[in-house]
Image (cartoon, rainbow, N blue to C red; front, side, top):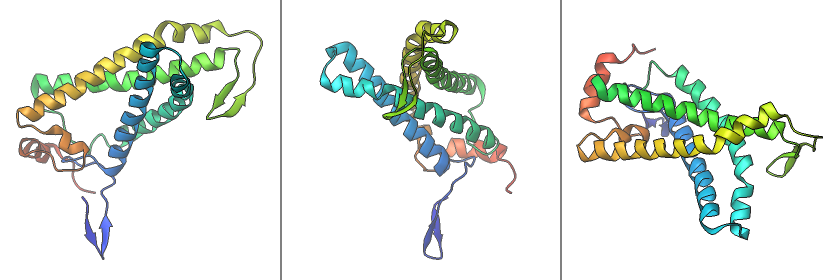
Length: 206
């Protein structure tokens, strides 16, 4: 909850059964912004080819990917730590579908940058993050590290984009039906139907 205590704002850092806390929201929207940057750069490259703009955009791809990999590891750890506190899924098939969709999103958000990191380690080229060289060039590449990313990184990335689009579409569908689940991720209380369910499953306060 964000309230007033002694004239200062009391920020809700942890999740509750009614809404996500400040940490979860920060991780969610930061990662959403960085993934949007990644996909926009690759899409523009495919559409307009190599230009100074796309060279800059795509040139940041590996560095931003490292940041995303670190953030998704933190987000997974935070989600596990908050799993008994955060808003519950709906009952029935809708809840199972949402749970499965979120599992797939987390799996791909981890796999896509991890594959890219494996390829970077296995390649002969130097490894640099935001212009800082972490490793110089090597002689030859390590095929068992580079091959999985060559096969899967791009395809899984586009699959991730499709799942994100589906996720966003379902949020809009629920909103049109009067079930504004997005409120929980922008800091507002969950809709009444979710609050009633949350009260039934919320853990005891600590």
